[in-house]
Amino acid sequence: MSTHETMAPKEFEKLYQLHHSWLRNVLFHLLGNNEDAADLAQDAFIRLWHRPKTLDTTQQVRAYLRVIARGLCVDLWRRRQVEQAWLDTLANHPDIEAPSTEHQVTILQALTDIDHMLISLPKNVSKAFTLSVIQGKTGKEIANELSVSERMVRHYLSNSQLNHQLTTYAAIA
Image (tube, rainbow, N blue to C red; front, side, top):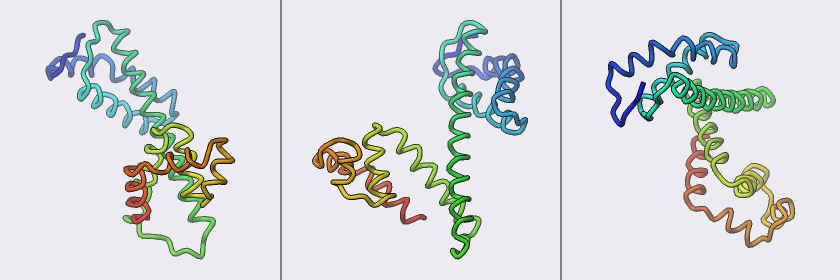
């Protein structure tokens, strides 16, 4: 059961047939939902197809698929938390006209992208951006909260790529 840089379709089909039902059951036990389990099992095999790895035993294949599946579950749970936060925001502000369904999908995607971006940053950088952008705190307030210098806060907030992405997402929302 080895995979190579370009996995042969027959080999992939064999892996799929041998392990799909097992993975779907694992995901069902994690998620408690057949539809989500089926979707994430498909996504796991798509990732396996795109990122082939040498896997010589059934145990290695299943361990690798389990790692992929857990990552997909975490992504799903985080996305659902972001969606729930968005729905709570809309529910708590009934005076705001609800955006169209298409605009809501765009906003949710932007919020999910921001979430992924922030969790990929070092903890203090992520916290500094959150305190600055969301809570509107000053550099001094952020420095006090993070127990760092104001200069360090400026350094955290000077990430031009992140600033550009946040500005772009803010325009969407």
